[in-house]
Image 1 (tube, protein in one colour):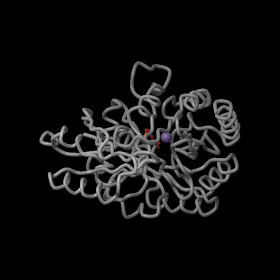
Image 2 (cartoon, helix red, strand yellow):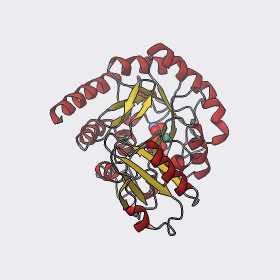
Image 3 (cartoon, protein in one colour):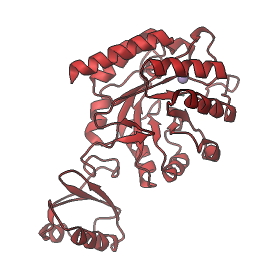
Length: 333
Ligand code: PEP
Ligand code: MN
């Protein structure tokens, strides 16, 4: 249920209403917008008397929210959420380019790629240290050492770092990481989501390989319900009938998620297609569809990459694409 407050309601009166609602065992999510404050009621609202609430002089309207996701719901929070990462903003008109290799491999590699994408205007550096590989015999990532190399690349370039966490047990290692990525394979690892909710750190939540938008939003709800509002959603392609492509990029997810939720939505055209030459057209399409950013794999030597070389752009290809994305966004503005 949401309660839309009248403009200019005295804070004290609003606080009294919030206390009263809390005394009924409800959680209250207060969204203070530029023009309106909206109270989102979480919990069993069946006993709340809507007519009584609506009759209060400080209340403009009361509506039931039928969706099971509440905190992530745009009805609870009409304005776009802007996630802030060390001076970089994502959402609400702030477009963010995240680029870097699939995996951190060596100091030379991550620093070279970080410098190149920084020069091309990237806002954040990505790179996996803990890799969720389909085969246990494939490169599993440099783990703690990889995180240290990412920090080094951050120190060299000033770019905030985004990297995947697979287990809550590893959280102490991630203390100095800027954005915690939850990969597609862990989208419904609810214990992990709850723990990340408690950290208060920005979380990049990728859509699962075969998950619906509602399931993605429910996973974001886990993070938000645990107290963390800093969530970025990521569409990275889903399993359908693709034969020549790694996945199917569901671009309509972008406007639909924007309609349903206030959270920023970015697109990863690298994992969505699996083919480097497919990345630029789909990145452009994602920007045109209103995405709040892009996450793109870039490698200085794709032929010898330990992971996902086939879908990785070379630094000069990334730079050319970034320029075109900027021009497209300007043309669309
Ligand atoms: C990644 O971004 O490194 C990754 C493994 O992607 P996904 O979880 O989307 O497969
Ligand atoms: Mn990858």
